[in-house]
Image (cartoon, rainbow, N blue to C red; front, top):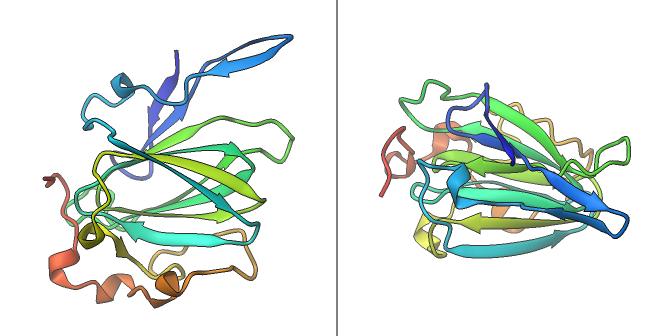
Length: 188
């Protein structure tokens, strides 16, 4: 069975270390189980993104949607920042490297990201990320935070990031309009 650990940096973020089962033919791993997150909602949509080394995606956040990320190929640095007013960890930033580790082993960890926690990743190698979400795509809930906001203090591990126009245009934390500010414990 997987080991689920709540982050000691951001309340509600959970790191999954799955159990691996293997033999001379290869291995089997459960990358997600609904029961691992008893306070979460059902994940209803699965997505996949392939990124080129040097790409940075984010920071994005949702008021109403949780994500579960897993990196089956390559390596990325995940950056998380708690935007939720009233959260005991409001303003905290955490980085987690997922996938292929510097020692050559793949850690197969996943990360559960609750609503209101800004999230992004940097492709440290060419990579694939899969993510499950508990809400269907809703452009009104696709919000963003400046990827290099000094208030976030993100270490992306990339010297010259490749960014989308959207991610280059996101506001800094102080510039998020009141109606788009997440609040701890509120969810619909």
